[in-house]
Length: 352
Ligand code: FE
Image (cartoon, rainbow, N blue to C red; front, side, top):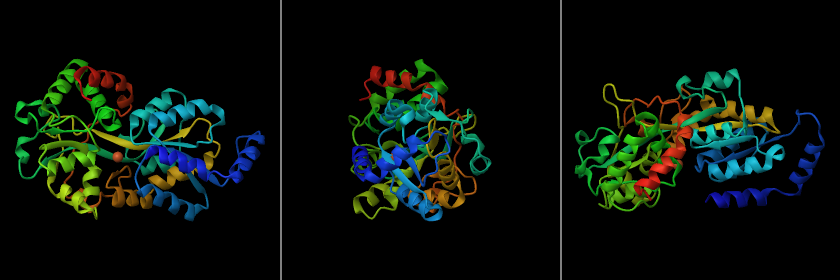
């Protein structure tokens, strides 16, 4: 899917754009006047197209998107250097934004509209990226075979009562890497390696498929508990596909680590960084202002079932029905800092 995104973007770049780029590179100052903005995006949700179309209608600024996974986009930004056409780097993981900032690929954004639009505790303390939405990596459990009172924390998933019951996708997935990074940051390396070992022991099957596939596997009786991103349950419950709808209905959402003194459920943001060499900086800032504003934030929650980074906007009705929850307050940059250790733990404990 990501590769299709790149191909589409390349094919849609016609002669007109090549001409425009030549004009731009002949410009010496940074105030290049253009009517477009270029995104490198890891996001893979249909709502995004709608957001960019709405922005174009409002401003006349054309939004060009190249989609790929975050590491591929970071490589591309590195290789292109000063000649990169990218204005904004969008990810579904604060860890990759932290990595891009560390590689000197981003510049700070300081803008009072954007500042005022978003929740303080989701902000990057270093000012290099802006959250647009957030999501929790929750537990979902079989309505038939598990009762809510049996669940408590991520740590408790290693309990032997869950032997052959746990479903989760592969360790190559960014969401799992971020979750493991959060455990390393919170518990330390040694405790986390023990946790991973215990969890792998309890797997219902070798990791495969997407988050949605884990829920379908619960519906099919292949396991009882899955670790998934919250919005996928909203997407399943609003799906027109019967198999997806039934999968969504077969489970309930559980927010782990909510008890007194516990740290809260692991969350991650989908966020935006302004690239170091952004050729259309003014347009890029305008797009961030738009995406963090009330209208676009409401469009996100109603279509992708994510949580808004803007405190004015309530979750969708489906998401509200799961109740509120305490978020892990870990500095989200730690999801990047501990990524290497997280990957080592996956390898050492045989989480495929
Ligand atoms: Fe996703």
